[in-house]
Length: 179
Image (cartoon, rainbow, N blue to C red):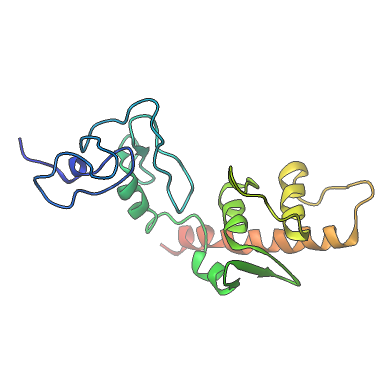
C-alpha cells in the first residue's frame, strides 16, 4: 500500500516526517497517521486557535466532510483567512499593538479578534489596561452596553476596539464579494 502524505504527519503534535520511510514521530513517539492517545496534548492551530479533535484532525474549512491534519488545516487558511492579519501587523509595535491612544499585548488582542474570548493563557496574567478591560466588557455585555458608572476611558477604549474588530473582519466580506 503506497504511503500517502497524510500518513506522514503526526496527528498528536503535527510534526511532518523528515523522510518517506519514517514510521514514528521523533518528537512524541507516535506512529505517523495514528490517532493520538486519549490523554495526549493535542495540536492547536496558530492562526485560528482551534485544537484538533481526539483523532488528531480538524474538519476542513473548504470541503465539508473532509478532515485534515493540523498542517493541512493551517495551509487551508490561505483560502479561508480569519481576518486581515496583514493590516493588523501594521498596528504592531514589537510585542504590543497600538489601538488609538492605547496599547495592549498583540497576541492577546489578535486572539480576541479571532475567537471573541479574552484569554491570556493558562500560565500568563493578562495586563488589565483600558484595551483589555474594553475587550472583556464587549465579551461580557456586547457592543455599546449601558454600564452603570461607566468611565469615559473605558467607553472610548470600547469604541476603539469595536472599530478595530470591524476593520479586521472586513476582509471576509471583501473576499466573499470580490470573487
